[in-house]
Image (cartoon, rainbow, N blue to C red; front, side, top):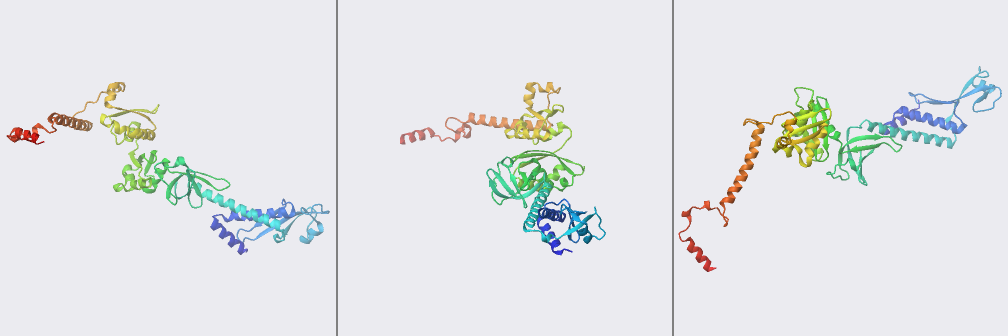
Length: 420
């Protein structure tokens, strides 16, 4: 047994994460290259390596001939019978070659082949490792800035966080640890090229898979995600177990689960809603926290018309249209939102074949709308009352009764004027 070779290959394989079979193949190819350099050709040479004992033999096949014209391929009958006594003309004789007799150049070339093979296998090993992490998240360290791009060290390889994949509201510093989403892993001669992202919607998905066991085991499914990185995310979830509340599972006790994701995303807001196969209900949920009067969805054209109470219009649209925009991304529908008043004025209720809603005092929407209107009316009335009560002197006449004025008030005022 070639103990030294076996121990060396096993140690190298563990350090570089290279299979022993690949190393044995590299040695085999290097010996063939050495033979080719030594003899000028290697078509008739075979290398046999025992995978158990690591013993190897180099055999050169030669044809037995009467007159030798090519000593590399042919052998005389007399020489053949010295190796194989029963050899006859035309027989193929296997001759063992001692690799120690190879020249320096042949040995150097063989060494170069082994080193090149080791580097190639090492690159392939690293590529295969990171290819297995494609479309998942990894934790890395900010290494250096390359222009506006950032190099993220992931251990055995560096990844590129392009400017377009960076969250504008986030600031990065050297040695900062980040969780990134692996978009793509490409193999090239210099090693794997890994592209990562902090803005990809699936980063949120993977973070919830880590934090929420129900999502990881498939009990709760994340059906859709719409994200504006650094600002807000909407996520629709569905439970495959009637005893599990999907939204509650993702939020966790006292919000511990969702807060862990929010912290990793540096404060990005996350809205979690229930998924519904009915597009109208899904759109209604997606516009949360705004309340909706009705939704009419056209599944063929992927369009929806939504009517909301007047006081909910700004909430449904959101700041700079963000709530409506994310709802449209989440559902895949083009959403047209109108207030109740706008719907009445434009005849939308009649167009949709609906009666104009008539609210009674027990209706939730009616109560909220009346509360809003009463509050506004009260503030307006109070302002009018104050303006009417206060005179040019800046105080209200009703604040003082006539008898509260001193009898000699006018005289005291006149004396004060004279003193001045």
